[in-house]
Image (cartoon, rainbow over all chains, first blue to last red; front, side, top):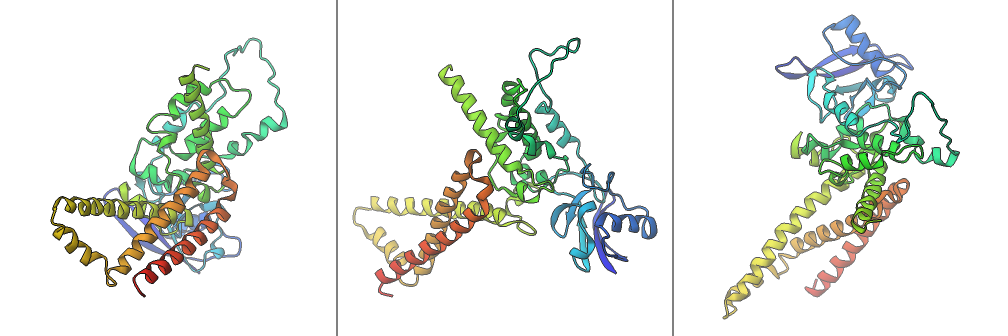
Length: 236
Length: 124
């Protein structure tokens, strides 16, 4: 048996509640949460979808650290497991947090290929070498679970801060050889809510379940932005 | 979460600890700077009596422990700051763990040496 201590929130008050969950080898924290919902307390609210570490919905704080509940095995954590909602987000109910702002920031950095010659009538094949793909490939693996944003000290003091995930997405497209929208994105990320706000605590890279190194992406974007500003000043 | 987010250490990695202590030592050094400027202002008293009375309080063996802690703050803030500068613009991000380990060793070594020198100068 494992003791699940879950941080509950009913819209008015926040409190801890304990549940006894029969833990089997290979059982994940998400399965434990489902066991609670199906057998002990159906009012428990949490997000989950794919159950295989792809959708990023089930990111919660497990034993003090943001993790994907579907990828975290109970027996690796011991008998006592604490489950809390992610920090830096408004809690809606129990483990469900408000991701509206997070996705709005993601949208703000224009996370798609921008081409000057976009013509859907006559589509053109855009060739890319393996080296060009490697420039950005790792950053395409982001699943938008929001774990990085939840531990970011800059995000904790400024709600409008773009955050590591949005800037990693911005870098992913800026580093893509097929993209021509760098100037548009630099304008967004070089604002006071962008790359210059990062304090380089690097915790985002430590908690990322996909190891995509968002802190590195932010710094690479900072470098590109700085050169872009410099080029603008020098008229190159 | 507000400013408390800067000082959250539970469940965090060594990088968050370094970030938090960088902030704390920065505040300590700022307070020290203000105290130092107050000291210098005491030189406006041409007789030197104010300066001498303050010096007799702070330059003493009893006060040495505070000086050592201040040096630790300065050494930590400086070396950790250099570590952050190394990673600025995305450099050596993959080597961040060995780099922070080297920085920690350097901080302890420099502080111990500085403490030895200071203790020697005060006749310890």
